[in-house]
Amino acid sequence: MSERAAAPHRAWQHPGLVEFGETIFAEMSALAIATNALNLGQGFPDTDGPIEILDAAQRALRGGLNQYPPLPGTADLRTAIAEHQQRFWGLEFDPVDEIVATAGATEALAASLLAFVRPGDEVIMFEPYYDSYAAGVALAGGVRRVVTLRPPESGDGPFTFDVDELRQAVSLKTRLILLNTPHNPSGKVFTRTELMQIAEVACERDLMVVSDEVYEHLRFDDASHIPIATLPGMASRTITISSAGKTFSCTGWKIGWACGQGDHIKAIRSVKQFLTFVNGSIFQPAVAVGLRLGDDYFDALASDLQGKRDRLLAGLRQVGFDAYTPQGTYFVTADIRSMGSDDGRAFCLALPERAGVVAIPSVVFYDTEAEGRHLVRFAFCKRDELLDQAVDRLAVLAG
Image 1 (cartoon, helix red, strand yellow):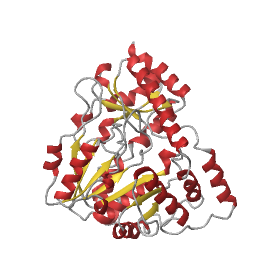
Image 2: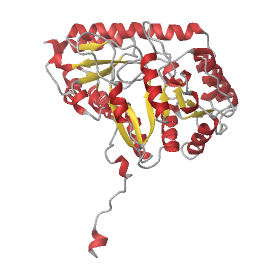
Image 3: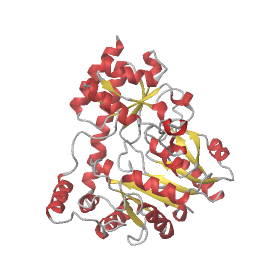
Image 4: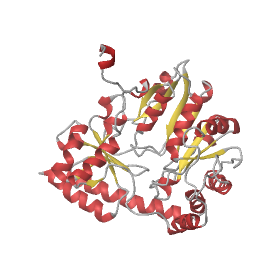
């Protein structure tokens, strides 16, 4: 047998994905199961969403809506999305040409990046960033450039960024800015002033903005969500993305959407048809029902989560963590240096055995690892009794 024939087969991998292995969420959720630990790592609720949408999905299942839906999504879902955008944010989209339904926000993001980023193009994103952003840029052959969101140096408050760092990150190769507000994992809600700074850079340098707004209804205290597409000069250069998973506690349904100018949405549809083609036939009509629920539902959702945020924050601080108050999302970021460690990954890998709780090391969301090495993320979208049990277990860390 020749040397060539005897050589072991090597699986080919997309060169841009060499740095990506199994996601941290899969790794830590598997560790939670193996150790019977309470999972405050992956951001999914442990209760179902509103009965109205569950009943609507069941009706669709029994009503024969089990075949391929239209490529851009059902007409009723797209109409409901358009109504939602107008009702809450004053954004007007034509449901026929300016909205496409996707397999969650993740597909909307991936399809947007594949549609608009050419090999070698640079994409600016704020770190810490949700891990699929980096993978999506890599799949498109792009190059990521990060601007760091930093916690307050003393006391409690939102993460902030330096607008000069944003400007310096832009080059002749920059194609778009990838924005996430409310922001996972920091819990930051970008202010109007900050969004105006980003918009100014985008307009000056003729950049697109892809804005991930999946936590749009998960805001606390007096934080206001402002879609960047509402700012002057931004409607024509922004893709606005959201999904049903976070708003209706149905993360497994994977119904998302992208809204934008007609030619941009046409490009995203062209990519989507070769990714999932279509998805969620019985869930699309159910999400349409959810988007039309009264304001009382959306207000109660935020109020309930704010109570859970406060519950976990108080518990973490009692145990000894320096924890930052999030303005939105599902997540609390904590500085573990107050617990005698500066290595978040090692801390989180040991935590299930030490305390029976799973968290996520924030360093996996950073390119500049020194910025996030000492931070960990806890999810509070869980039942109150589970949050209390987790805090009781974490008390062992206090000695």
